[in-house]
Image 1 (cartoon, rainbow, N blue to C red):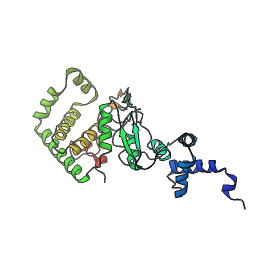
Image 2 (image 1 turned 180 degrees about the vertical axis):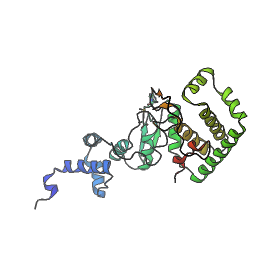
Image 3 (image 1 turned 30 degrees about the vertical axis):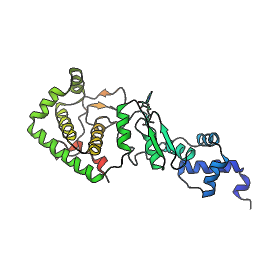
Length: 262
Ligand SMILES: C[S@@+](CC[C@H](N)C(=O)[O-])C[C@H]1O[C@@H](n2cnc3c(N)ncnc32)[C@H](O)[C@@H]1O
């Protein structure tokens, strides 16, 4: 009986192995991994990857820190992962000069490469930093609990939150906030923000700031009256009340369950 390799040309066989590794994570035998490097040029590897299945619809893209925050035109993480696996080796440097939410940089770390990301958008820089910093889940949980307790206290006292809401924003920003957020939601968000800003541990504070932002900039189920605020032209949904997940506390809608899941 003829074997598979008798029918498939050696170069074609190598390219198929490369695609299996890059797209499906099927680790080839060690000598084949070496042969990718010796026998296929970077150009040939790139061409082989571009001939692969680049549709990742329906695949899980929420693993690791990828789902921390929405961002416009995010890559499915499987896309940079395939090219990182196929074109670079362990410990190589992967540079994304327009990293956005840092998908490529997170994948570079997960694949044992060094990732460097640049962007002109300050939100992108914050996201990249937080998503690639190992989180101490205990400190984070402790900080989040402190934030919720402090915010509940501030809301119960009322005065400081009202004062901050009146002073914190210029007139144009205040008009914007009044348009998108119900008065009660504004108070709850301000209480959370004040409490987060009080957290001394920088790593926890940065993560909680982004968690705070993630409940506002969201595709659905956020705390504004917008429909699809993650996109550039959201619509005001007059019947859309900010989503409440539980009814125990005025702040329950904002509990950062996603970040604290361990
Ligand atoms: C489509 S987003 C990238 C999204 C990314 N692939 C992800 O998965 O999140 C493009 C990014 O390029 C950044 N950008 C545009 N022009 C830039 C420039 N001249 N220098 C640095 N970054 C730039 C934008 O700020 C934006 O974050």
